[in-house]
Image (tube, rainbow, N blue to C red):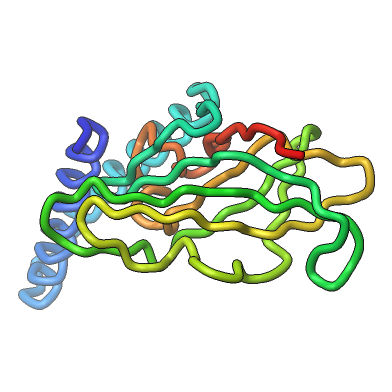
Length: 197
C-alpha cells in the first residue's frame, strides 16, 4: 500500500464521517452547525479534486518494458508481445496480444473481475478486443503463485501497428487516488510489446 493509497483511505473516512455528522445535525435541526459542517466538507472535496487533477496533468505517463510485471496488490499482469495474423474476428488482418497474468499471493485464490485490455497504436489510438480470448481470460481465477497466458485478438486499421497494451483494473478506487495511473484525467500506463512474426 502506497502513501497515496493511505491518503485516499484517510480522505474517504473523513468524508464518510462528515456525511454521517451532517445527517445527524440535520435530524436534530442544528442548522448553524450543519451549515459549517457542509462548508467544511465542500471545501475539503473541492481541494482534493483540484490536487487530483493537478497531479494527473503534471505526472508523466508511465511506460513498462515488454514482459515487465505490474502488480495491483497481489494480482499482476505483463504484456509479452503482439503478433500479426492474416484473419481475426471473422475479418481481415489483425493482431493477437500475448499477456501474462500472475499472482504473488501466498495463500488466497484471486481474480480481477473488472480487468480488461486495450491495444494502442503508434498514433495513440486505442482499440478494444474484437472477440473474447479462446482459452484464458484476464478475469480468470488464479491460485497462490499461479500464472497463465491470455491471447487477446484485436482489429487495427490497415497499416497501423501496436505500440503497446493499456490495462484497466476497474475504475474505482483508482480513478480517485492521487498519483495513480488510473486517476481522473491521467493518461494510463503503456505496456510496450515485442513484435512476433
